[in-house]
Image 1 (cartoon, each protein chain N blue to C red):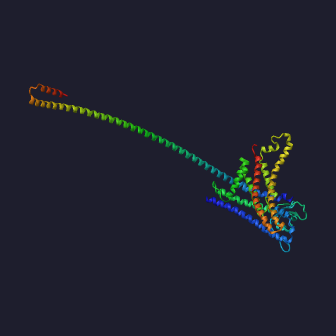
Image 2 (image 1 turned 180 degrees about the vertical axis):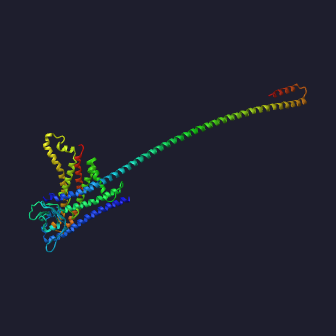
Length: 357
Length: 163
């Protein structure tokens, strides 16, 4: 009983901490926006472009910028975290820089040329059309890398729990995540995959938590919109596509190339349609996650931009009333989209490995 | 269009990061969790089954006890009945015996009374004959006259005394 109470209080404190964090961040954001708006108003209130600001926040960048100040002389000071810039120049080799070097549109000289950050595209300053492969550890990549550390810490704690409490009730972190894992296994994965659950459980559980943690980390103010980036969602859509098609059985391919119940002379139409169908599923997965997460960020940022657009202090208060509930909704969406991505992946896999119709 | 153009760098890093996570969490940790969950579910299942079995065992035991009790009760009933029967029989027998005994005693008494009566009568007869002889003697002595009628009376009295 006392264990139960302690567990409950743990949950409560977790939720209250989360709520406090959200409120705190909302308040922080607000104050920072208010301060910024004061500065902006003096310079020029009309040069604020919400679309550009929002897109800048939603998109990836090479430098993890936290905030920018403007001094009396009108000089901008950028504060942020410098990240490694890694370029591969075909015909040359790898180039390594710090993202701090590229601030203020500075031209950076490397071994194989001079580079400049042109709207978050590193291009050759002398020849903008030269092909350069950018493998930089950008803000999004760094955020995802941090999520890897978070995931590894979490899961090592969880697995320790399972090794410690063999046949006993879960404790600590384990008891917080077990309902999620059991829910995913019993309500999402097992109903779709049946006897093949164990085979695909590792992939799907990893997928779920990877997306979930990235969704949640994207909501931390100052964080990156990592899971709302098309490259992120594309990675997982491609993973699911590969898993589905490499585990596809005879019936699955039979369904693609000779759909049962369709006359043979329709196959010139049916086969291309089915092949397109193979690709539309992961594309839908990719766009759904991308649009939902990015959309959420855009909505939140739009309400925050109201403060700058209207330029009055009280707007911050009003906007907060909208932003705070929306923020909680975004936390819910973070879970929901991770759930949907995993569920649809399980569904697509099940259609590929199903034994009979 | 920038926003929906996947960058090769991010694709590379995300794939790498996911593969790292999958290699550690997917390959190593998820099976541990899965096994832990399954083991626990199994142990709970077994415990429930054992409890069910214990319940059934107890029910069986109870039923057996009840049966045993019923048997004991029937036996008791039988013992009581037979004891009662025996007692009744014994009482009847005793009564019968007592009756016979009493009859015998009464009969003995009667025969002894009869004998005694006879004896007494004989004695009385002797006494009476003696008495009558005395009377007769006296009568004779006193009035031994010629009265024929008296002589006749004596004779009659003696006759009548013959019981």
